[in-house]
Image (cartoon, rainbow, N blue to C red; front, side):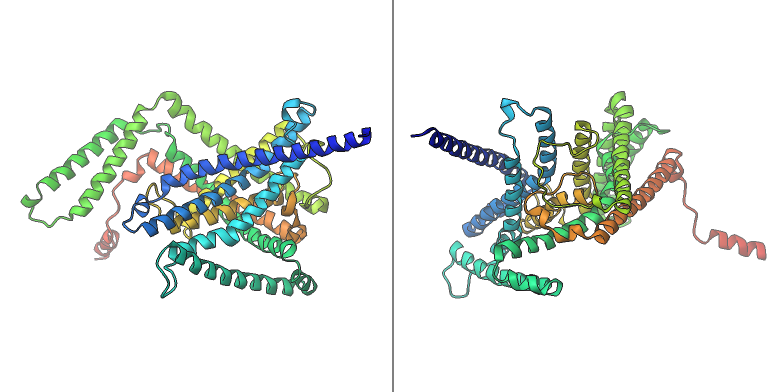
Length: 488
């Protein structure tokens, strides 16, 4: 064998080993996410649905739970996709010839982006509709009872839904571009799925536009509930004494209900006792908190939230100015430059870390705003009391939000990392008016939400601190009576 043949063989072996290494790393990453998501879902599922008398229903719920776990793992992978790519690029820039990070290359990052895109399509279009129809199916009339009969009915329903959705997508694409819609009839994989996912991603980006400003405002109140607030012109001992006194009075009233000549609402009294007990536990927690936790933890947390929120709004405002000055700041798709060649932040590694922190912060804020909105508040999962259909709805919504996160971050200018894989094929990203209006709407909604929340929170805190909330309310009709008396 000649030297050229040895070189060709060595190149083939190297490519084979790199491919095997990428498959192993991707499998390990997804297995880790899958195990974590399975643990989370088992904490929220309703145990009664898996210990039913009917073994068929329990089997169906177990299958649906695994499908939801897969979908939630894909959603978590979509959240980690952009931060992992940004940090990997900085690591490759800092240690370009390190032997221990040779596995971290552009081919692996591109492969992860394509896998997340593929699994997101698979989960949104096939797995989650199948899971919902599977839980609601009972089998065709006259067919043999069992899981297989439910599978047949679910597959038929899923095929009909797929035809309906694809027909609607084809009509929408025909309205936008008639020539492209004719070509799409012969190219299902290269046109239909990316176009359908582009529509779903656009809806997710619009949902992020509504939920993220609301979540940014709600993050302050949520953090205030989790942390111990500093004592400001208040006496905890007095509040504990009053709470214990009211609880003892209600308990005595419940125990001596027969001696009272007025009818008592026992259910209302029990609810009041539970509320007082909860309030007393919170007051005890605040009293036992250390001075560092009480006087330093809460202000630092509020300061961090304020800095992150203000930095996000500032970056969006700068991006709006860049769009007005130079259209080169428009988000683009996949570029020819590979990873490890140039930093995606003007501040280097420090700026990249700030970008990653902001992306995670906005994602957490969007989830908080999603579950705080009146439209989706009923979808909020409960600990060991979440029905299977509710778990399916949560997984679908979280996947839509997380899969739109890379597009959301790139549209707002939080990072200059261009979208890789099929994420860069979204045509509406190149529309200047859509991108500009989106940035302006996000900055405006976030500013309005923060101003409203801060003014209301400061007003309520001052009223509570000075004891104005404990003042007696004016009796209705009293001023009017006094005016009549003066007139007489």
